Amino acid sequence: MLDGWVPWPEAAAERYRAEGYWAGRPLDRLLRDRAGSDPGRIALVDADGGRWTYAELDERADRTAAGLRRLGIGAGDRVVVQLPNTDVFVVLFFALLRAGAVPVLTLPAHRESELVHVAETAGATALAVPDLLDGHDHRALARAVRKAVPSVEHVLVAGDPAEFTALADVDADPVPLPAPDPGDVAVLLLSGGTTGKPKLIPRTHDDYTYNVRASAEVCGFDESTVYLVVLPTAHNFALACPGLLGTLMAGGTVVLSPTPSPEDAFALIEREKVTVTAVVPPIALLWLDAVEWEDADLSSLALLQVGGSKLGAEPAARVEPALGCALQQVFGMAEGLLNYTRLDDPGELVTGTQGRPLSPADEIRVVDEDGHDVLPGETGELLTRGPYTLRGYYRAPEHNARTFTDDGYYRTGDLVRVLPSGHLVVEGRAKDQINRGGDKISAEELENHLLAHPAVHDAAVVGMPDETMGERTCAYLVPRAQPAPTQRELAAFLTDRGVAAYKLPDRVEVVDAFPRTSVGKIDKKALGRRIAERLRAEA
Ligand code: J2J
Image (cartoon, rainbow, N blue to C red):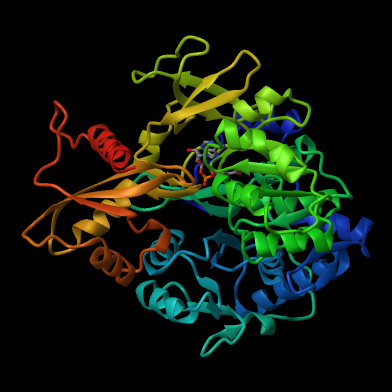
C-alpha cells in the first residue's frame, strides 16, 4: 500500500462498500471486461485513423505492463505521465495500473517547474513523455527532471527516445500479474492549486471506478457512445467524467483529438460520427462561432458537456440552436465531487445552473466565513465529502489540516448557492486562484516565481474579467527600482524558470505600494476591483 495518503475512515469505507458504491474491483477491469464481452468492437480511434478493438487495446496494455515489469517498474511505483491525446497514453495508463504502478498525470503544457515538483512530491521512479510536442523537446525536459529528481530512474519516450527508452520497446509477452487492492491508490491527479506548489490527489481503484460508472450512467453512455477527447487526457473531466474511461466501460468508442480547435474537432466529429464530447467554456464559445464558417456535419453530436469554469447563461442558451445538440453543465473537480445537470432537466436548470451532485452519497454543506451553515439559498463556501472525494492530498499534512474539516469535508474554495431542486449555482471563489478558462493558476505559485525576479520587490496576482476566458491573469508589481520589468521581460523570465505558458501573466501593472487590509494583508479584492475598473475605462 502506498503511504502518505489519507484513506477514508473505516466506518465510511464500510458504508460505501455495503451500499454498493465501492465495488471492490481494480480500475483496469473496465477494459478487461469489455475485451471479454466485445473483443471485436472498436474501442479507440486516433486522429490519423488508427483503430484498435477492445481485444487489441487490452492485449497492448498487457504487453506494455509486462514490459514495464521487465524494466523493474511495478507495485507502488509512481510514474509521471505527460503524454498528448494519443493511443500511447491510453495503453500506458492501463499498463501502469496492471503493473501495479501509479500513474501521476500531468498536462502536456507543464514544464520543468511543474514536472520537477510533481516528480519530487510523488517520489517518482519513472517519467513518460513525448519526443517533441508543439515544437517543444520533452526529452530535454526529462533530462532536467532527472537531474533534479534522482529517484527518476527511467524515462520512457513516445517516439524517438534519444538516450532514453522508447515506449514502443516497452513490450513483452504478457505475464500473470497480481491484482492491486481496490482500496489502494490507482492514480494521482494534479490539483489546480491554491498554494505555492500544485498538490497531488490520490484516487483509489474503488473511488475512481465509482466516479466513472456513476458518471457514465448519469450521462447515458452506452455501446453507441462515440466520445471525442478534446481536453487533455490527463484532465479528470476528459478522463473519467465520464470521459474516455466511462466510454470504454460502457463499450463505446473513444476518438482522440490532438487539439480542441474547430478544424480538428469538427472534422473528427463528422468522420467518426461523434455523439458526445466535453469542453471548457472558451472552447464552447469558439465552437459556437466556428459553426458559422466550418461546414462540417455535426449532426451526430447529441451532447456537449461544458465545465471547468462557469459557462454564462447566454452562451449556454446558444448551444442547442447553434450546434444542434443538448448541453450538459458540469461543475467538477479532480478532488472528487461532480455536479451534472441531468439529461432530462428543464431548460432553465441546464442553462442557469452548474448541475447537482452525482451521487446520493455526496454530502454537501454551504458555509459562511465562520464555518456555519448559511440559510437555504444563500451563497457560501461549498464543503463536500463522499465516496469519490479525497480525504487528503498526497504527502501534504499541513495543507490537509487547513483544507479539510475535522469531520473530513473538503473545502472546495468555491462560492455557491443551492436551489430547491438541489442544483448548484457557482457564484464565485474564496480561494486564491485564477480560473483562466478552465486552466487553474495558483496566485501564490505565480507570485513566488515573480518574486524571484531581481527587479521585483513585491507581487500580487489577481484575476481580471475577460469575455472569452472568464478571467485572465493580472500581476501587480512593486518594483525594486525603475525601470520596472515589462510584461515581455517577465514572460521570458518565467519561461526560463520552466513555468507553463498558460500561467504567464496576461497583464502587468506596476504600482508603488499595494492596498492593505486592516490586518495588513495585501487587499487583493481591491486590486481586483482596480483592474476591472481600468479595463472598463479602456473599453
Ligand atoms: C464554475 N467553476 C467550475 C463550473 C469547475 C469536470 C469538470 C471540471 C473539472 C475541473 C473536472 C466549473 N463552473 N462548471 O475535474 O471532472 C472550477 C471550480 C472547481 C475547480 C476544479 C471535471 N467546473 N470549476 O475543472 O480540478 O473552482 O476540475 O473547484 O481542474 O474548477 O478544477 P479542476
